[in-house]
Amino acid sequence: MKRTIVIGDIHGALKALEQLMAQIALQPEDSLIFLGDYVDGWSQSAEVIRYLMALEQRYACIFIKGNHDAWCEDWLADQLPNDTWLFHGGRLTVESYARLTAAERLEHLSFFNRMRNYYVDEKNRLFIHAGFSSMHGPDHEPYKSNYSWDRTLWEMALTMDTRIKKDSKLYPKRLLLFEEIYIGHTPTLNYDVTTPMKACNVWNLDTGAAFTGRISAMDIDSRTTWQSDVVQELYSEEKGRNK
Image 1 (cartoon, rainbow, N blue to C red):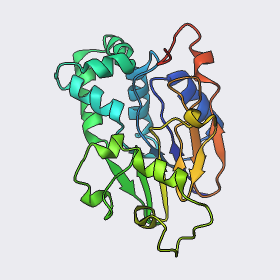
Image 2: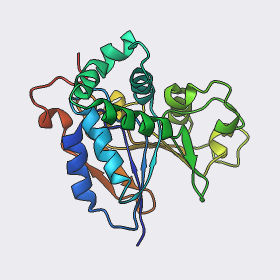
Image 3: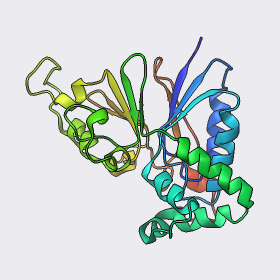
């Protein structure tokens, strides 16, 4: 049976990603939707991108762009490195790209250029790294950076009274636009949760791989969930983005 599998933030943790994919046991007919933030955190960001580029040669893949990916894309396009980016994991990403040839870096830049800001499937399910602010949906978003930075959509979903039903005038109109919404960006560790979280019709798949958490994946139809080991244990000599 064909599966659609959504994967949360990776942050340069190739070992954890490979471990996760081994658990999933991909089949040729499977579709994969990655929610962004492939780089920054652990030491194998360039290797993660290389792995994903090879993966899309074998499977149907959709790659959403995260805020860390946008930073890396700018740098690969010869813009000066953003100091905030370097502080939040970018330095290890720069070091990982020193291991690649100039031609490989250009191939990776092309891959970043092809990433999507968001994707809506045939069942009206939205996949986006962070969120959107427009009451009319991401197509009408006036602040394009919100695709990879917005946290208000998730925070709104978290604070909704669960007794309020979808047919109520009090239910947030942004959430009514889609059957389901899948995001990353905000680690569930912020809420002392180590597994994917659901609030209203929003699923958060960022389970803190950049810090002391894991990479998570979910079959969005069966709700089967897979997780890597704690990433920090796989990179025991590194700190990731932990202070």
